[in-house]
Length: 160
Figure 1 (cartoon, helix red, strand yellow):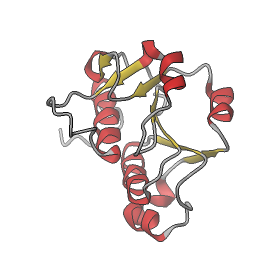
Figure 2 (spheres, one colour):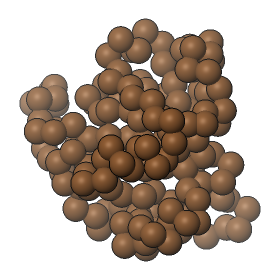
Figure 3 (cartoon, helix red, strand yellow):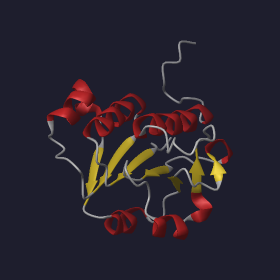
Figure 4 (tube, one colour):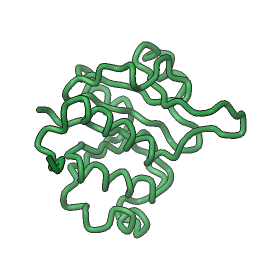
């Protein structure tokens, strides 16, 4: 089975990236960081949130979104946004799928969303104009574990 990928476009909050790195280590998910980053990858808050899981993270850093897209244009991609056209439970999640998330303060750029409208997904929330979105690390975990669940958790210790 091909690994899934979490792609953080211009992440800003170090502990979110560290927590997502832990999820990636625990699930064999590849972590992509698209610059500019709002922190140094060596930042102590990123490292602390990721604990001692960093050696188990396949992390790739890309200079720009265009560079990332040139490298992975032929991969199945899902753009996770509160403006998604479908619920994440309605997506197919092919092997090797990439889940793209925007920065914490602004989400995915409107141009990216327009160009990929058919591949946008969202996590449902109760309606409340003051609640903008879920935490980025929580959202990434929800999506990747749903994708793995659908694959039957291949190679995982499920306790069965």
